[in-house]
Length: 444
Ligand SMILES: *Cc1c(COP(=O)(O)O)cnc(C)c1O
Image 1 (cartoon, rainbow, N blue to C red):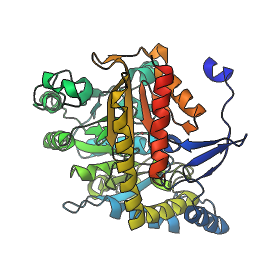
Image 2: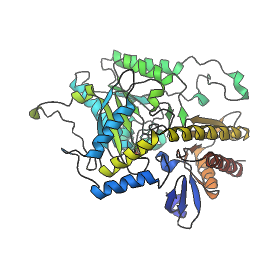
Image 3: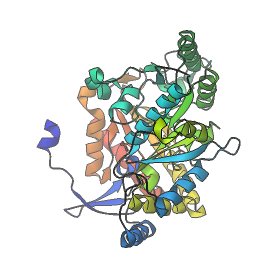
Image 4: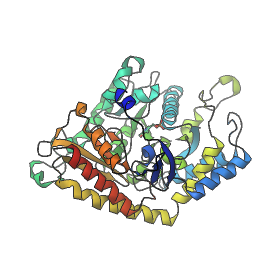
């Protein structure tokens, strides 16, 4: 906090496309899509117009016992987009305010489902090491990042964690070859999914199988942009389901095309029972989240009035009409062929530019999934020795990038690039060039 107090903040006053402008008139590229939320750029005429049109009718009315047109249309659209052709599943939508509350609702639904169906009296949850699911107490309880979550330890309920893949630092020394030193590895034997299986089996043997297995699909964001190897999610999900656990997919970061398909789970043909979305849902214009679930989970909350089985959870701004209008406009843009083309071009440009960073001695790993990338800085690429967090390597590189007109935030020693989908290939190359110059300036 002292560092932050000492410095003059960059005061953003305007934005157009992938460009932000501060009060002094200096322009920056929004290289993390305003903390992973923005899809089509700032000030998009279609989204602006949709919000203004809705504002002309009404900004907000309670959804507690009432309905609204934009929220109903949005729910219908989300159900259609989340559909898995093989097993249509996510048919019910609960609107919340953001990613944390979307996860909070998923957690409570899974908890009550397990109790009401008699599966467990004291439902337990299994999530991944280094998981991040938001900052409310339930979401923090599911998280396993010591630095973020340790402070609240005494406040949290206990959840179990299991190893998530981190191929660059694979403890079994089986990481897939990324560089010339590849020969030191042996072939991956899926030891990490074996661990998932062992954990689930042990809990089942205790007579109280896990109520749900919770995961960020394809890539863990706050863990440092750590992707799962192809096939991991499918295997882990099959194992969890085989042991009777519901699947809770946290698509808050990965949803809405960020990894390629509309939702990351679709890439691995995993059909979760609950799915949390937020960040990009409104195109990054307004705060809004949603929890999608199945008819089976929904059914556990149906009853006569005096059974009091309703889902006891609600927010004042649930199903906010302005947010829903923005989301509908953003999703229409997202489904256009032009957007698909632009995303493909951007993904290739970003990937090509990132490959040029391998020659930097402080670049240990470069990880890209769709339109998300993390560049892990290390003291020495040969030994993979990390920088101590206190050295603030990631923060200093991002400060050097800001001087060059590129704004992003690091996760520890990982520099994150998450451009809005509207960024041009030239803008993506400028983001990577600033990263290169930043590393050159800061690391020696
Ligand atoms: C950002 C994020 C959240 C929390 O979302 P908020 O809108 O910040 O509350 C949850 N899960 C994941 C994977 C995230 O990236």
